Amino acid sequence: MLAARKTILITISIMFLTIITGGLSAQTPFTDGPVEVKKTVESAQAAVSEPSASNEDTDKNSNIFKRIGNFFKNGFNKLVDAVKNRNKPGKLPSYISRAIKIPGHETAEFVFQGICPMPPRTSLAAAKEEAFYRYIILSYYPKTDKTSQPSQLIVIDSLTGLAIRRFALYLEDGKPYTGHAGGITVAGKYLWVASGYKLYGFDLQQIISFVANKSLKTPETPADGLPPSFKLPARDLIMKRSYPVDSTASYVSFDGEHLWVGDFVKSSDSKYGPVPHHAANSYQLKTWISGYHVAKDGMPTARQMYKFTSDGKSREAYKPDRVILCRESVQGFASGKGFVALSISYGARSSKLAFYKQPGSNRAIKLSFKPEGQSKTYSAEAWVVDSETHLTTLELPAGSEDLEFDGKVLYVGFEGASPNYRGKWTKLNPFLKIEDRFYLISPRQIKELGM
Image (cartoon, rainbow, N blue to C red; front, side, top):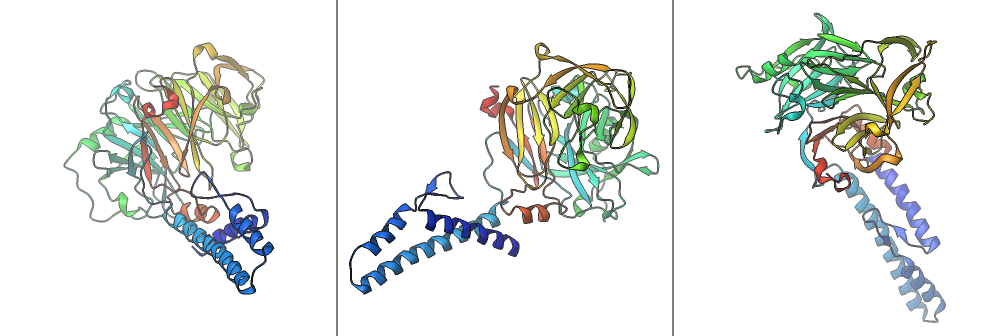
């Protein structure tokens, strides 16, 4: 808080100097309108130019500086209050139908990443056709310097807002999965987890059955290396299938026909540079969101593979059936009727939820590409998502992550409330909005989408 006060004091000082030296309108941090300070300056000039007794001059000058001093003091106090209260729950916009607490962020062992609703059965259509999804699945990656536990899934009962089940993820018996779990989605009989250029498939029926078992008891004490809110009935899940994709697999979603698995790219950060052949296009867009058609069981059907180099490593992946080219800093993608949405965030700044017209077959292009290290050129049906198809953008709290759309509700959560980020980010930006809940958004309430 001391650092925040210093930042605020510097900000106010600059504002104050600008006001008293320029005689111009100053922008208030509390409204969209200007604060008129011209009259105060004119009063001071008039007091100097008009002849009067010395005691009257003194009184007037004293009054002027009292007013300026009070303005300075009141502005400072309001800014301090704004910093203190910036993360108190307030009235949400009408398009946010629910906001539910994200468990696990009371300690630093795990960081929230992915989100999707849990269907009541494993048919392919079940992920999109239900009128209401009671249970919501969240994914978390472990901070391996703080815990030896694997990546986790937590199931939330949306009727109560409470966490009810926990799943620990394993690649095989005794071999924990500790990947980023940057996105999750359900297709057919699989819950797919995205990270590290792969999709990891887990048995959805095991999750559904465990959630439905009402005889389970909460353990008396939490397992070592878990936050208190993870003290839930739990079981291990072992990966059933893995599927290498031509994407960094930072997030994933399902639109009823295709799994969409995307890159996170930030060219200014060497850790998040683009995949070389993804950046080699005439549109100057470096992010790929690769689409893979799935069979009725939820397994991708693409079988053509190729090798490529990325992050200094040789990789092998299945060629996508479709590709979307888009901007950088994307953390999540979802497709709905008439729109696609991008979750955009990076570091200590507000996130964005950007909506674009849904790519249609009439706007498809043939994307030709040559993976690094290959002599052969490949092609895929592709669409460009950019300013020409932009519909609207909403501002969100810091650290927005994975997206999923179930046909009615758009799901998005935030990593900013994790102790690994909250203090660091708010020190850099004292006015930053941090949210410890995930949102259920109704696109129908966003007028710019015309739904």
